[in-house]
Image: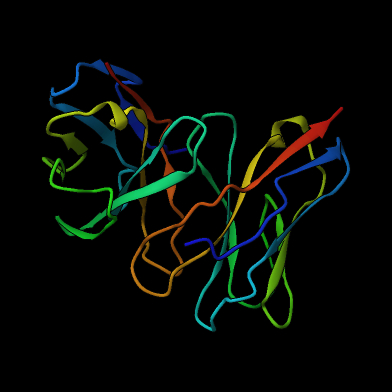
Length: 115
Length: 110
């Protein structure tokens, strides 16, 4: 069964450093998403992406964040200058359809630890 | 952003049906009800969604009341692997955002 993959599984970085989290969505999917989950808290929407542009973003997704689909398979989330509060599990998701019929398939997540 | 209310936790005996309730009394006519689950710290997993008719797939059934103010997710024969946090989500009528609440932590007991 096709699945969303994410690398790395765990990333440790120092405050102020840039990080890039990578995702390979399911191959025929067109809609891509990033979510985060701070330990013990809710899953929070960050951004959705379609047709090479951001379609929606939350208040969390400020100027420190950016997303890119650099080629036909990868979807990346960049955090420009990490802060301690960026420590969280980051989930990528993809879908082959838009609302209301979409089913989002989530990856296993990347645990980001900012020290 | 919390548009749904779920009990924080439930237990279910293995092999029995698990019935997970959700209240969404402010739902509007074009909003769908989605169910996802999260096993331990894995990524959320899609289960089912519906608008007003009852829905069934290989994982579960979704029963939506006629007034659409509440719904129930039914796992017909719960297994230990169904132990997870179950999220009932009412999709906002514009945009692509899912608002995950705190969900119901279901424990399937042997």
